[in-house]
Amino acid sequence: MLGNLGLLAGLVLLIVLALRGVNILLAVLFSILVIGLTNGMALQEVFLQHFPFGASGAFSFAGNFLLLFLCGALFGRIMAASHAAQGVAMAITRWLGAPRALLIAMLVCALLTYGGVVVFVVIFTMYPIGVTLMKEANIPRRLYAAAIALGAGTFTMTALPGTPSIHNVIAANSLGTDLFAGGWYGVLAGVLMAVLGMWYLEKQWRSAVAQGEGYQATPKDEQMAALAPQGDAQLPGLLRSITPVLVVLFLIVLPRVLMLAGVSADWISFGLTQPILWASLALLSGSAVCYVLFPPVRPNFIRTAGQGADDALLPLINTAAVIGFGGVVIQTPGFHAFAAWLLGLNLPDLLSVFISANLISGITASASGGLQIFMSSLAPAYLESGVSPELLHRVANLAAGGLDSLPHSGAVIALFTLMGLTHKEAYRDIFVVTVLVPMLAALFVVGLAMLLH
Image (cartoon, rainbow, N blue to C red):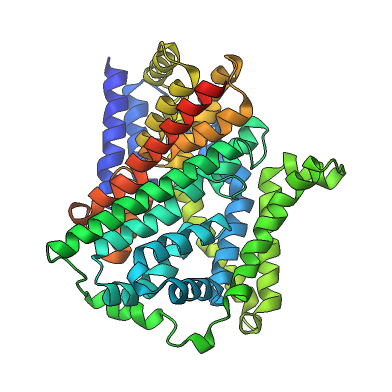
């Protein structure tokens, strides 16, 4: 009984500390101390074994995925330094026009994250440009933030096949699948998320205009607007700007296309069976293309690459810390009872996957953390019950992208902090587009898969 109460207290403590802005690593360490003490676990096992080096340990995860985080952050930093990310954003803005600012934000964020640019780089790219768009279209800040979240943190993260996102790679690495597993289900879910999310945001925008709510400037807007490109002449054109992203996607899809065409070679097999290394190589190739296409980035290329390496550390450590927290949680009797309850529910396997992956991601407030814990603790049972690895890959990814965006999510807190928003002002819209809509899309895929299998 005490152990279960301690487990609950540790979870609540993690959520409260995260909401209060406490560093997630410190929050995790305090929380696992509470869990360890109340569950009678030796502290040396908690802090020196389960948290760092267990099957879901922080350092175990960091060691496996360091290269991917590093290459993704490097590519994102170089795309930003070359103004290619801004070039994509401004070209789409000219094409669609400022009155479609919400659609522009979603499309640009989706395009960049699908191509491998890390979420935080995308946010910092879109906010300075967004100040102008919000002014011209009179869009409330809360809705623009939700459009960024929809494009950067939903369908390109968990649904669309082929993306080098950490979530897609975790599933592929754990199940022995490739980055295109369950592809058609992912495409259907991705379309649903984009359409439903944008419908909601446009509806809310019309309602806000009718009620007299619009854009309100803040002192920080002036600073961020100064970071936005002041003239199109200094920006590369759309074709040149988007080429590095297209190269990354082309290299990722190439082994799958050649395999379907009946071509066999060792490097094709490598590309299909080593998702971490292959996605990392694709991102490095995109960075090399930036070096070739954008002369202004060359003089400071090494320094920019170093900044990219620095950019990788914080998200890697934060994600690893959350996963290490899960590594301690899964050692407790309470979690084993919880897992047994989930697996013992009289539900179809895919619906059980949906529920379990969602709950674990909600507990950790991290899709990647929840997915890693799910793969190491529950996925083997679903494979044994007959769920195919490809289908489990996609359904678990989709499910992990539901409750991961609860109020204590690090990404949500970072977005609100950057844009000067509070949970009271903006979380309702974030909840709809990053929790409710993805869960509906995942349920649709689960229902369809149950009909077809």
